[in-house]
Length: 238
Length: 222
Image (tube, rainbow over the protein chains, first blue to last red):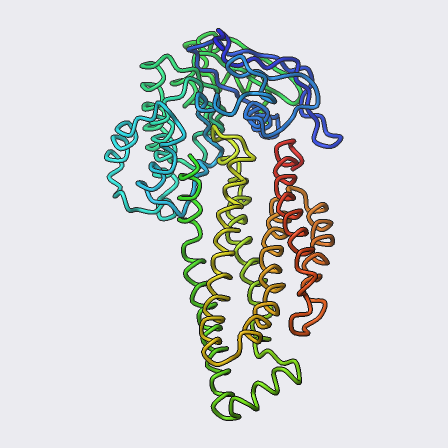
């Protein structure tokens, strides 16, 4: 199924028990664009990622990825979606080589060389366990796996969590080059607004229960104001 | 893809399987050495008379080992998956969740079955050098409900660990524990000789329950 909108989030309402997370939230992400979702803690960013990924059924509304309803998407279409979970969650008992060997059979476009190119940059050995790596190294392994998978759509939940500035910059640069080369569509969340300035094309700023702003990131940045300034102006300091 | 699932489970659990094999081999060796010692000290005729007349099978130390093996396996397999909801990695694979979770369960059930079959085979092969066929068969029938307890215990604990909500997990434990206890109603030798098919039916039924826990996870019951 070919769609110009890679993500369609349509009038979604969600509660956790009696607590409203947001109501009637709608947005779409066109093919080839990188969209960043910004918001304070507890505004529903990870909830949005979980609904997009099919791990939560929304209270109301619908969500479509690649033209498919997330509730009925055929399993094989998930090969076209790369997912990065918050904290760069992977299998700590595997080595660099073992995790590549595990994932390769699932993805028809698997590019082993793209993964090992990034591992050579990290200077990690094939037999090194993920549990013995730093947060930064694990994040690069997660990024390397995404690049090897070569998905059309990437969903990244707080990709900069736990990373120092050096690894964050490396991650952003690699991701930006990878996406621009292959006309990838990306939906991501992050707490580090400076990273989003360098990476995203469009931006959604959320507050509790609603979208405050949805526009190209260039419209939110002026010579006098950074994206972070705009974010604080819209959402308030605390 | 299926081979990749088995590969992952092997990497995750190879230390467990090594230890389980050692412990089971150790206990089986101990049981056989005890039996041999009894045969040598009391004599073959006296030992046979005790085993037949007083209904003593000399394998009681084995009773809870299969259950402990199954429970520990379920914890080793599923706790890492539920930690920080790592199971989402499996659910995001381009494979139906019934296939991916099914293969994970199958790999462990097959491994347990092989381990218990190996135990039972070694016991039978060595015992038949010292005991008549009827006693060897009776020993196997005595151990059979304990092996089934290991498989049922594995499935029940998998069901409980995969359940996303604590209150339902407690309910699952309350339902599952009596099902396991059915395998230990009596320690009379071979008393389950006609009842073991019912335990097999219970095993087949409880093996389906982990899928319900995953279904609830996918619905967002977290």
